[in-house]
Amino acid sequence: MIFYKTEEEIELIRQSALILSKAHGEIAVLVKEGISTVELDKRAEEFILDHNAKPSFKNYNGFPFSLCISVNSTVVHGMPSDYILRDGDIISVDCGVFYKGFHSDCAYTHAVGNVSDDILKLLTVTEESLYKGIEHATVGSRLGDISHSVQQHAESNGYGVVRELVGHGLGRNLHESPEVPNYGRRGQGIKLQNGLVIAIEPMINLGTRNIVQEDDGWTIRTRDNKPSAHFEHTVVVRKDKAEILTSFEYIKQAKQQ
Figure 1 (cartoon, rainbow, N blue to C red):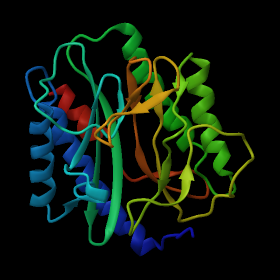
Figure 2: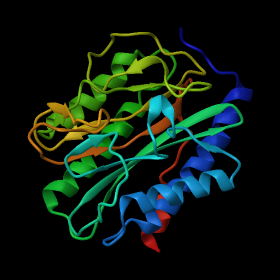
Figure 3: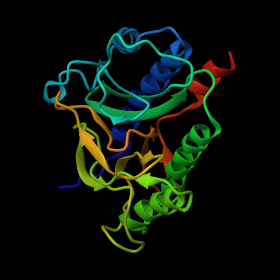
Figure 4: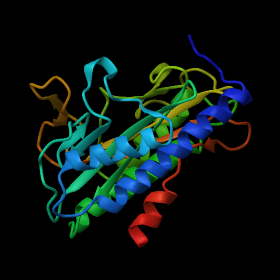
């Protein structure tokens, strides 16, 4: 069942998304050579709890951390650890916030130090793919219009689009209907209506689209061990232009500092 949100509910998700966006900014300040990924997780959890919210991911289906941290060839669901970030790494930080009964969800992939031009292009195109999809999160469009736009932009640049993992609706639950694939055909799928809140999240690989799951039951990496990027926003379907509730501005401000 799809739950369309009232304006009052959207306002609560917007408040959740603001805390989440600021948490991403706090993390971005720390993303540099020499820090462990578990330190990033601790800081994110502290920040979220200090704002009277809860980390959506912690204890979700048994996941033990507040962040999913995916480095280099890890696509998603990587677990924070003692791994120390190095020059040339890329790190995807995926975080959710639960506030006043509603979830928000957002991911960003950072470059650490000096990263090759090929990988920087992967990050750029993946973020562009996200916004290409968001352009179609409007009343009267079809779900497949979002999916096709993400796929077309990524594949036209020669990248692999992960198919087994998708975006999703969210609200009172972290994962709600509908699923939002990053591949599909224009004009297919449900017709989008005002008040639908979805997480659009391209997961794009430098190599093929094929993935494998590690023995921990969570970590997903590329089969060919090439890098993968992940960007995500929480979005409301609106009549003329989608409303993006999460923001990368706090991340970009942190990077400028």
